[in-house]
Length: 224
Image (tube, rainbow, N blue to C red; front, side, top):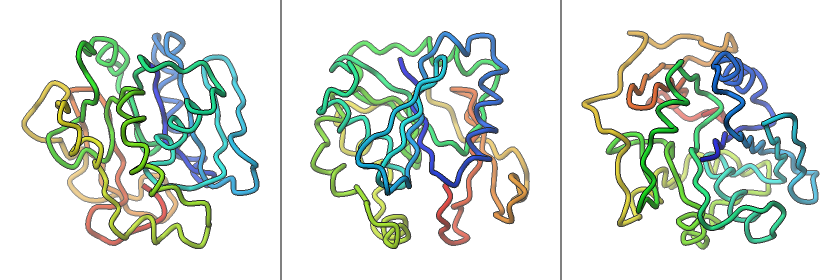
């Protein structure tokens, strides 16, 4: 299973923080990691650069939480890489941090007869496992989320966002090792990245993942 990270041209601090937590794990180099970086509007298409086990893909669109999924769809169709229908991806945001057991937990997921898996029953923030097949099946929906205009970012972020749409509409969707509730790491919001944006930090023990959330009913920002 490949790991896919959804990122943005202005999210260097977040992606650096996430990769630092990944590199600290002894299993880091056992995984292929693909980082889709939205907001590179001047690119003619997908600009690809690989360094060790990480592939960086600059995208000429900023489709908020759907940037990576659209990228996987379009790259598969264009045959830019040798992605196959049987590929699986663990999708996550750059505003995450992993624990020491994350890679082991990802490796132990049973993918037999799986099309998609969410991290919890509701409000999974699109985070979870996707097959290439289920991404292809939702082509029409994903392309409605493709944003190639910088001045429309907030519109795509806040109006009818339809987060978890694929999970909610995949009849075969399941939850990764269910548990009672996500765990709030800090009691109150914190300025986690020291950039003025207050965030809550939630922990998902079923995959040993921390999500550093800016959108928690305090209003929308361009950061996730």
